[in-house]
Length: 241
Figure 1 (cartoon, one colour):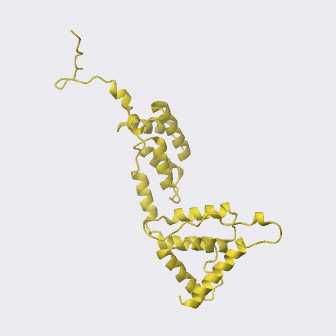
Figure 2 (figure 1 turned 45 degrees about the horizontal axis):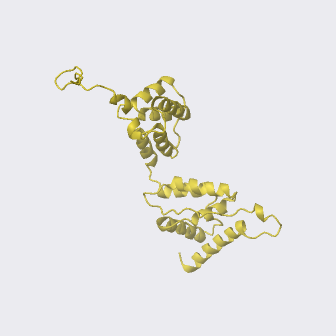
Figure 3 (figure 1 turned 45 degrees about the vertical axis):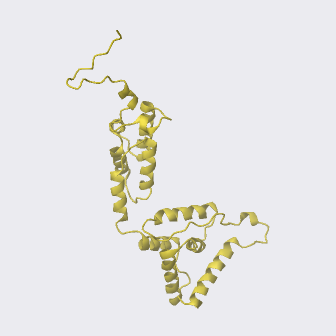
C-alpha cells in the first residue's frame, strides 16, 4: 500500500467514525452512540482466539447501540495490530484497486474473512477434542466454567452430545447421579451436578478438603480405622494402663 492509498484508508476511517460519534446539533446528543471503552487489540497470533475477540467487539457495539455495519467494521479494525493489521491493510488495498465502495460488504463477510485468515482449519475438531478430555478436578462450578468456555467456541454441537461430554468429565459419584437423572440438555445436567455437589460436600470448603480422586469426601476418610500391615483386620486400640 502506497502513501496515497494509506491516506485514503485513514480518511475513510475518520469519516466513518465522525458519522457515529460526531457532534449533533439537534439537542439529542444523549442518544448518540459513543465508544466508551477501547476496542480490544487483536494481533492474529496463534495464542489468540479470534472468535472470543469478535464476541468482545460485538458486545461493545451492542452496549453503545452502534448498528451501522460499516462503522462496526471500521471500529473493529482500530484494534488490529501486527499480522491482523497487515491483513486488513492488504484487503483495503485490494478494494481500492478494484474501486470497491467498501472493503467488506457487511459484518458477516468481514467476520468470515477474519475467521478464515486466522482460525486454523481444524480448530473446531481441536475444540471438541479438548472438551472430550476435560475432567473435573475441583468443584462442579469450576469444571462447569471450563466446560462453558470451550462449549461457547464450538459450532453446531447437539444438546445430547453436550450432555454426554459434560457427564463423562464429572467425578464418578456425581457422574452416576446425573446420568441416572437422564438430562436432555447441558443446563439441566449442570444444575443437577451442582445440586448433588452441594448436597454431598457442602459449600465454602477448600477444594483439597472436599474431593479426592474417587469423589469421596476426605473428612469421611479421616474416620476410617487403619488396618494392620499384615492383616485385613483393624489395628487393636491401645488402652491406658
